[in-house]
Length: 242
Image 1 (tube, rainbow, N blue to C red):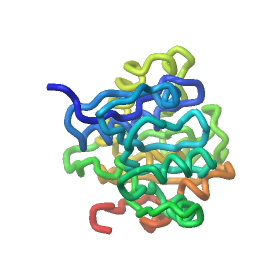
Image 2 (image 1 turned 45 degrees about the horizontal axis):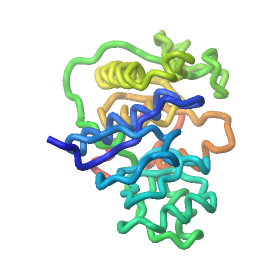
Image 3 (image 1 turned 60 degrees about the horizontal axis):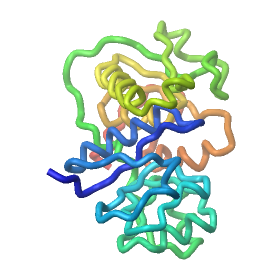
Image 4 (image 1 turned 180 degrees about the vertical axis):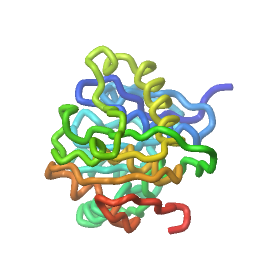
């Protein structure tokens, strides 16, 4: 059966496991689809397959010029190239967070707030084990140095990909699925990573979320604010009830 859709996959410099976690989540909502590298969108040939776009787009090369796109959970800085791209869609632009929705309105792009596909993972009600601290200090991430996980006997995990992993999308996919399974059944997760926090909220996994100490966090974490997340304490919000 020939696929009707294309989705974005990653193998470029600067991608992290959270990028692929978004793709894993989106793929669950679609029938058979074909992957297109975000870093190669500008060179992608024309196709009848609808390109379903999600993730963070902040570079001019992340623009596809040859057909209709469905924007389903995008965070964007709205460069002129992106604004023109978004306006070509036959569907409403789907903003991942309230900040992006506001940027879309300012840019004259008709949009709606749709959230992130990672919030659609099903709830988990089975037995739980394992405590994980994901990129909170000591892992090369600019984040709060007072790691709550260290005081809570958590095992340390990271979404930072090695150079080799970053070049192999299949390895990234496998690692994303493996980490998601750990988060799904965890007793507790502590993180400053958005795409650890959102899957945990969806799974019903107790999670302590801290804002990373980087300037773009306020924009990206506006999705957490919209859910009523209280930072630094155990959170069990059910996104499906909001």
